[in-house]
Image: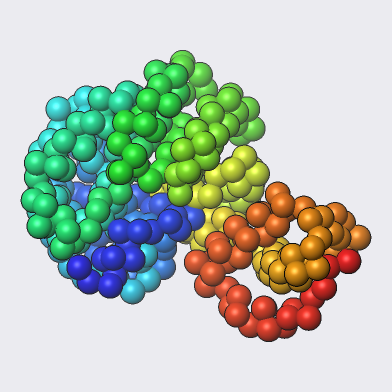
Length: 322
């Protein structure tokens, strides 16, 4: 397995997951020049029924090419298990040694995850899997039934499941509700999904799509949705246009001041331990184990996002607990 493939197979940074229509060679080619955490070649919603077979072939060829330097991960969104098309999708894309991630839509029960697990087990020999690495699965939660079955979905294939994604449009259809700018009608579902992802220690919790992207008002709405999602515990967002990627990746990254605060905490914590202090203060605020744990998580994510944490540690090397 190449170093790039190994890194992609263990990717935990999906600040933006950009869907690219699998039936469009032009868009597939264009996606190679982007800077984005995750490109998801789409075989589902963006592909008409008459072009599914063609899209499988195009996506397989795209996967077989070396991973572009600006893309951390290439995923494939297959058709839903219940559609009757998923098996053909899987049989084609698993042939590529570069496949690392599947995005599975409309996951509603443990049986859907078991189906994916069984197909992968029978389609990839032990030698092939060892050589090319594991497959990660991102499950899309799109219905009331899926929400009620979150626990069994998360338990069904822990060796595969790497994240949960909220698909708001299909959820609205299932619930016979209308999406509003405030998104309050999705509050319960979004919090359920974020909580389940955390409970099962899944690296990725990816929020709903911002459906408009052309105007300045649309961009402002995207920013607000990203900030709200981040506040709920999401760490990434689905994107349907390249213009959305930079905003999503910026907001779902730690800010400069946040990283500096976290680095200072981790340095002072070591000194507090040496001094036998279980709780201490910095900048007049008490620091205890939960705060220190948050700081360590921020530092870890900052490193993944490209912050020069080493330089910050040098800058704040003399930080002391109060």
